Length: 274
Image 1: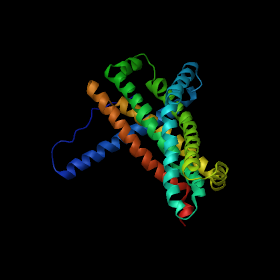
Image 2 (image 1 turned 90 degrees about the vertical axis):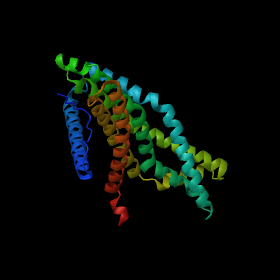
Image 3 (image 1 turned 30 degrees about the horizontal axis):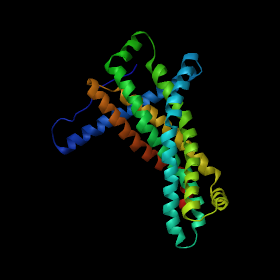
Image 4 (image 1 turned 135 degrees about the vertical axis):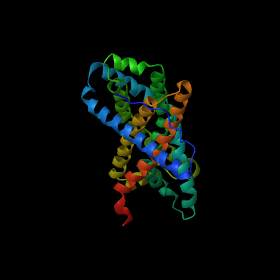
């Protein structure tokens, strides 16, 4: 059963009281989101059901194929900016050939999964929240529950599985586009031969960088799906509530992705600090 509570507005009072009420409200929201994640994982046994499989494929198309255009442009210009800014500094030491390593490692470890997740949170996550919120205020979710149709299995599961699959794939594609963009800058503006750029990039990048980046993307996909669906299910106050849920989805996703990205990097590269 999906629980929905009205949006919380701290009553007037002293600062400590408002802060405490805000912390309690945030903790309750986090708990409900975690319960939604547990419920979705419990429904994983239905992932190969015919209706669920068809919906997953459709959501993969919506979240993946329709996002390729903006991800291509953002990834290429991210790689170009990294190459240009790094090359300007490295040229002072006649080491501009090393821009390949800088771009490759940066894209694999951080920029690839980070930029991909932000794009998906802003486009796909906000759309999910708006869809769920509209269904809540129009009582379609209540109708599903009355018909004994589990909304988590019917709505959340396909969206989470699609993002779990497509976010790592889009991240890998984003890394490739970023490296290509950096190579274009290296050839045209820094006089770095293509073969030297690629050889330097491959020599300094490790398989661990790719695996950690894809793991981040996988976790980011789960975060986007759960946050978006949770915010959508928590919608109240009609059309205004749908807009608020969409706005909160983007903000919470951005903040959670930043914190989770740092924690994963700290976990896997802690030995590099010794």
